[in-house]
Image (cartoon, rainbow, N blue to C red; front, top):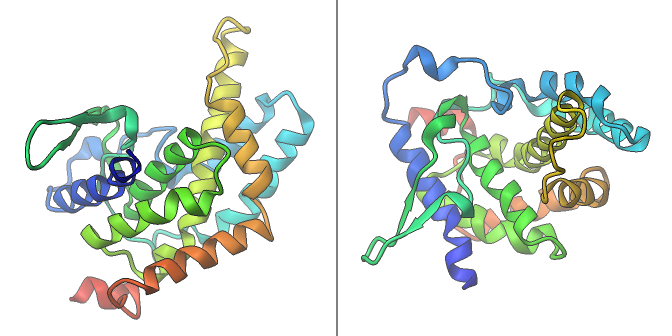
Length: 231
């Protein structure tokens, strides 16, 4: 049911809140192509392996458009799961019916990247629906468990688009080193479709606006990130 699907946001928010209490471990900062802190370098490095010139050009424009917001001085960082999606959920016969597995990718990254990754996978699972109708309930449910500050919400669609860009660029690189023996992921073409339709302005600006408006319907946000941290 849809309500269970959208509870991915609740689960991701609870996991992020729990992981925020962990002490830093050196392994949390190990290099990873999937860590959104390094996503710009990963996309640029792997874009050359994208065979379609129009798709390669699209990646360049996505980086130029969305990369500006990725400033760790303005986005909170902590240990995150980094891969919460419908394929990693365990449904339990209890009053607290969801659990998560797949902790191999746990890392120190942007807090907002936890939600962005969940939203990116949700879009792939619901291709054909408008991104707003898919991700807004997930974002609201996350925010109820783990409130994001205005700066983080403003960057959220950029993080989602860049997460999809990481996926397609790494997929292209993988095929190049396996010389075509690696099958095309069933999610790769859907990811390209989303990026072409909604990755750039004006569509991306409209989705960002809808994200902010949807959160305004909930409890008031902290005025600034520093205020949310100090409280």
